[in-house]
Image 1: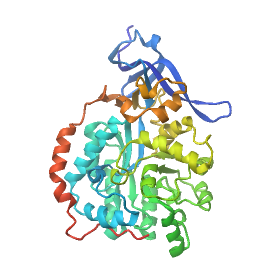
Image 2 (image 1 turned 45 degrees about the vertical axis):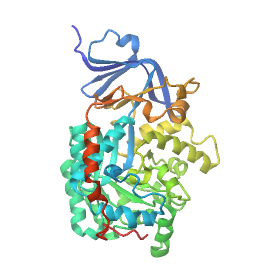
Image 3 (image 1 turned 180 degrees about the vertical axis):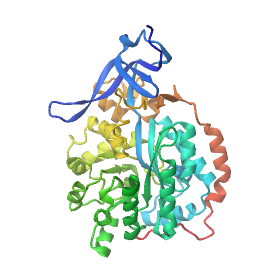
Image 4 (image 1 turned 90 degrees about the vertical axis):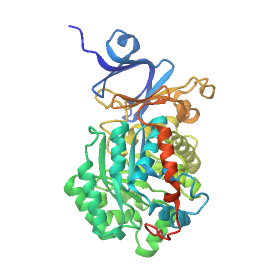
Length: 454
């Protein structure tokens, strides 16, 4: 009996795979001259190219000379903020928020959010990002874009205590209504902004809602050392200890940034009864001249996954997770004073499986293996800047660029093929967004959505 055709076969590539060493530690490895067989959006098998040669398929991609990797995951961003890329440059954090970003965000309409999200998704697809964790406003608009363009996303409607109970209720309503949307590609979270903009009562209520409804929480906390020092001076506890005393460490939580995490916070995080993860976005920390970075090594030592992120393009100017991967490896070497940490293979592990775990998808994506969703990118290493290849992991992390991604696949659907975007009309988005810029950037009203005062 002739087997039914696979939906997609990627053949002739080198596949990045995850293996377990003799010491029980997970490791990155590579399988050469391989093929990936996809059926119903799921990886059916990773096999030899010769074995797949005669297997029927609806679609075949000849990926000779390319590396098949799990799609990258942007573990913390504000996708619609690409509309504000470059409007607030060379400013300290407080001025950046209070003088520019929060006044401008008071002008946001759902249409602005939709167009920003559309442009952001185009940028991420072209950079090999297949999934992103977004924490913003008017998230129904973002969810609609995700459904249309084919990406995977972990979405939360952000809120402040200054909005009253309605902010928290809106975040819950969105999370429940959109959970499992886009044929399962959308997962959701409750999204209180931060301990300095959401009071303890609201944080505790959020923890209760998370437990009641089986929802995770996505929050900024200990973003920088100043926030931690201010929290200690005002309240006698760190932001991480605020999360503990309000019950948020008893539920699954994704903490954005954490560059202000102190040694005293580590046992608190280690003893959490919920699943804790941290997202690091190093480019923004450099731009704001923050003196510390996410303590990746210390967090990894206590079993907390650290996922890679970009933050929003208003602070980072980019949604390039590839750059975040290289910067994380380099900054960790400098911070630790140890060239052996972070290695290229460790950086790839953070970019793939650890990032998947950070957004609660560790059993679904993050590796190319039978039973996993087929979120795959193909990377072309034939350019002069990636040749010769002596160490494939180092080439991917330190030599390759996001522009070397040729093909991006989510759930077995090709969203970009040979650098051609198939699901988003970028010129149309840019044109319409440009027409809306004067109204969006107007600050003459003197309003702002919140006060940055940590």
